[in-house]
Image 1: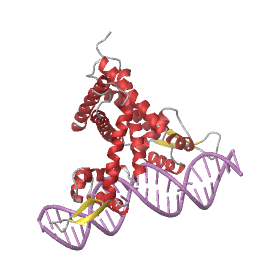
Image 2 (image 1 turned 45 degrees about the horizontal axis):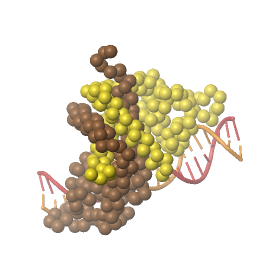
Image 3 (image 1 turned 120 degrees about the vertical axis):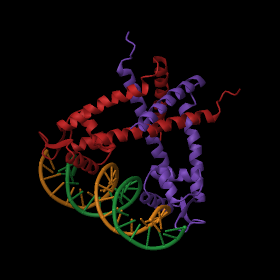
Image 4 (image 1 turned 90 degrees about the vertical axis):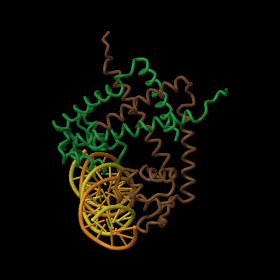
Length: 151
Length: 151
DNA sequence: TATTGTTATACTCTATAACTATA
DNA sequence: TATAGTTATAGAGTATAACAATA
């Protein structure tokens, strides 16, 4: 038997992984919609939840997007009661985007749903199975980082 | 030691999985852009590549979207030379969306890049490691299908 | 009457460029 | 002069609703 596995085995693993991507994304989008958030907006509230109040400039850099886009995202989050624009303590050009109590509550609820999902996905797996899954995923993460870095 | 694992272990596995989602999506988007396609448009060409020419109505149902949206996607694919609108052989209301030779060539190239990615991600894994990764992913797929079905 | 695809309209996310207020 | 955030404008993707042509 040759030392290289047939391609079909690896391709099947990639297809499985892509199916997980599709399903996980669908589940996330659905869960976010119930909380009144979109994927783009939750990235903002996530940054505010960890890290606290923040200028729009800093948000734009952390998100890897433009200042204009952040204006739109914060507009939407402000209109739906997730954040407020406060004056920056020292720089009168800047705004301090801050989570409202409602926004903070939703983020806390999201964290608990996150743990719940982890239990639902992995609760039935034994310790050894979970460890080998983690090892495989870590391998994939390392490979993908390499591919994206050396683009 | 209690029979239930601490939550933190499972949450870490989920975070790993979410990181794979983010990285794989970034890699796909980048690869598609090089081929002149977006994610929404490649779903259309994928359906045409497998399955052959197709009415817009059938595309809308397969994509789970509206007829209006398919009009826009096919407009874009037509303008960039991936597909043509042909008259339907028997139903004069309908159009037969068909891959051009260029579109078919790009899809073939995509398939070969798919195999290449599978080799890059999994080539260094032994048979046993790959099998246990597959088992874990299959478990996750089954769980996610259950969650999405019973929404 | 039902179906296929279109136009009309609107909302979200993204991007560039020009501009205002402040530093 | 440089920076923070805005308005102006544009394009992709999604959705509903009204409508034309055909079945």
